[in-house]
Amino acid sequence: MHFSLCDLAADIAQNAAESGASVLEADIAETDTEFRFAIADDGKGMTESQLERAKDPFHTDGKKHPGRKVGLGVPFLIQTAAQSGGGWDIRSRPGIGTTVEASFDLGNIDAPPVGDVPGLLRTILLFEGPAEMVLRRSYNGTRGRTAYEVRKTELVEALGGLEYAGDLVLLDTYLRSLEEDDEETDET
Image (spheres, rainbow, N blue to C red):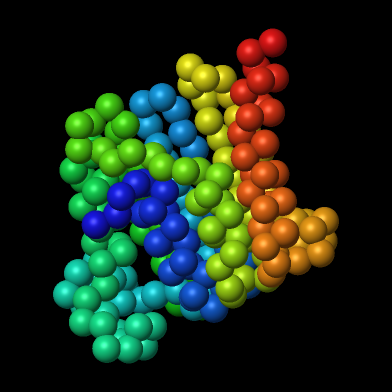
């Protein structure tokens, strides 16, 4: 089971990154009462029958993780969304890509904690695969408003890469500052 909603989103984003996509887009939206994410890729996509099998926890194609007998990412997402009074949707077309959307009622006692959103964005940016990743974040609640977009290509250009510890520290500091800067601006 995933500890946080960010863990669920990271699992889905990793699937998207490993789909042969050249572009991955993630929208992470939050209010005081709801957490939503949408992750889209332009990867290989799935047929209707593949999509149905992806919802089955006791099925895996054995290619992505040889020897694994179960595939739990999508089933955990479905279960968590349903138990927390949220919802989910998956759309996919072969050769076009896949979009996974989920929402969670944060007031529901069964909703996991949101988790570390800047850490989630950093994790997604470090997945191998897509040449471009576009991450959008919005928050509108009692602690203020936050809205920003980051692009992997722009970050790589500014930092010179994302391979070294120093780059990762700068990336983490930058993502966390985006959350703090907007909160402080709204309070003044």
